[in-house]
Length: 133
Image 1 (cartoon, helix red, strand yellow):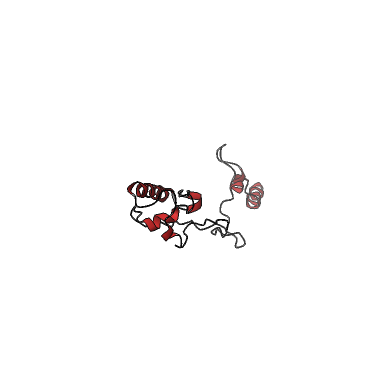
Image 2: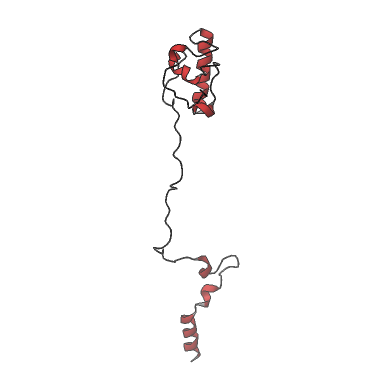
């Protein structure tokens, strides 16, 4: 009779699953193991609000000090100053190449230093600079 009661208790509540085998282990019911995945759970998906990575305008293009028309796009028409990265939108590597090429073109006489060449003033703008009219 006692064997039947013990078997019935073991069938109803498996107490041995609640007792950890070692003191550092958690009981099985607390580990949430072996539970089937429910269809109403959220699924992993890509963030729809994440902005696509910005592409540099000059990545893949060779920057040369003799290409004055390209270099003049990154120079202010009024002061002759070289635009910074926050204006040009170039990556760090290409911004350094453009700056070096512009300075080299200044030294070698390909570009004027204090202003932009007037023949390039009507070119389409690469940089998004807005001047007050």
